[in-house]
Image (tube, rainbow, N blue to C red):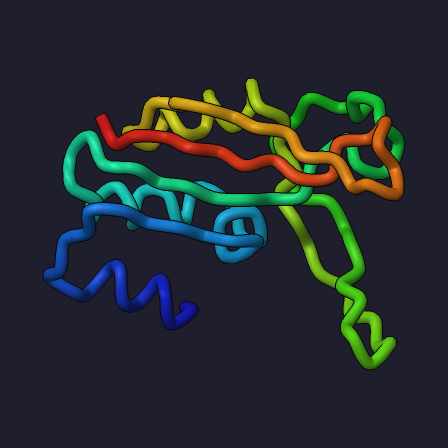
Length: 130
């Protein structure tokens, strides 16, 4: 169990906002962090997270609509490359997963990489706890 998961499961604290910038949300099965966040986030307060856009590699919709992890590589500044798994969901999939865990999607913004303006690079999701 990761530190954030343990903290969310065992602390008694409440939050007015939760942010995940290319972090646990997107790097783990959403069924793990979202219920834990929902238990600690005050009602109607924001959950905001950024994840790599699922269309960033090709600019097209992936061939599968299944909400499942995909292999990726993390390139570090020193040139090292480390394999990892990401949950790359599109906006509709995030909306469904969020609703299943007590959130309502408020906004989804797509950002492009200036070097590849035709392919979205990042999703910024804002949801509210119901």
